[in-house]
Image (cartoon, rainbow, N blue to C red):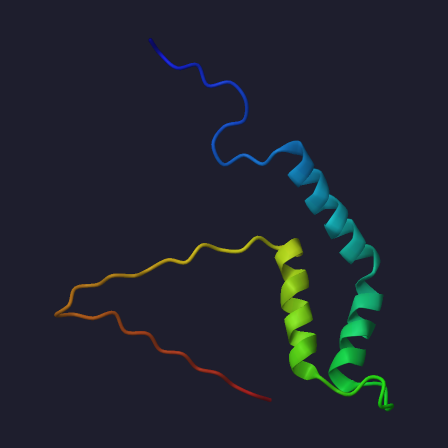
Length: 95
């Protein structure tokens, strides 16, 4: 007896998930200037003891917001030939 697969295909998002992500994206888009200002305020502080500079926290908040705007990518492992290992070169330039 063959199984009948009705419903969403594997990996497809349900309607609620799609709507939630769209709502979060609209919220972020509509408050782009505010979010930027809030992150700057957290990173640089407001000059009072109420809000001391905390760039690490600002970066953490930005990373948390990014999860709603862009999906997390799966980790991939690159396995090479043990006698000929994969080589990677990375150059970082600060201006």
